[in-house]
Length: 388
Image (cartoon, rainbow, N blue to C red; front, top):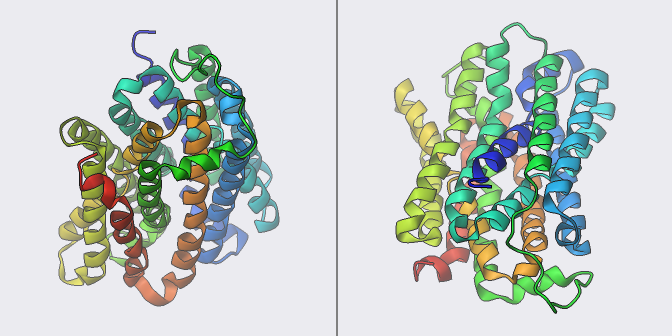
């Protein structure tokens, strides 16, 4: 195929819309189920935990490198669509909702990291730029449920969630038709994959530095995305359950796609490591300054949140590109899945603490996220120092 990247990134957009589909209905769920805001964090963490266990299974077993990535992606997208639809139709309380969101997370483990492997299998020579587009679509996919909610107007919350299931089915069909790229095929005579072989990747200094930067980034990213609607309300920029809240949440999260694309373009000139370091520095600045923004006019707060939304995810594709470049080609899928698993395990703690402490801390909750980008900069230092 002449240019498979647009197909992969659009499929990623549609498939990852499952991730935060329940968060777009947070206000309705709180009201109709009689739950607390912290319970929305529990639903989000159920997805994260499912994703973690799924990626660990793919990584340690080597399944991500034993079977065609396109088939795994398509199968997981279909199963994720069905589990997401079951949540919309059958969930009436947390006891039903949490297991269903967990299964959505399990399925996403075959969508996000396998999407990255598909990119590297098709265009390894421009992995940084292509992965920037891919993560940009992940970001839009995260924001998409808020946009669907805004566009749907008077739609019920189950209807908006079901749209994500339909999009995931389209994603499965697109990737199944595309298939795998010609690169990353196992070398002739390469040793058979062993259970746990992925752990070898951490003995590579460059992979270790990239992974440490990614882990710091993850402490901040998903907690920020989870807290965006609350930060908008607490800043006085929109009222709860309003169309303005859905619109602002969509734009603040979705602008990360532009940050990814801009970072991908810049990486061709300065390298992925320096782009990642710059993004970490900018998001750390936003973390530090946002709780002090009370004196700013509304447009000033919006600009700060937009800068944060753009920078908080702009580094993500470059960690994947750096890690894929550093590890042996026959374990790229497993290594990326394992890196994802650890990174998403970290998000469980920041999401839980962020949603649990939000009522007491207000917008000062942003300071909880600050250690992530700062520690990420330290971990990534060996690479950005030399402009990797």
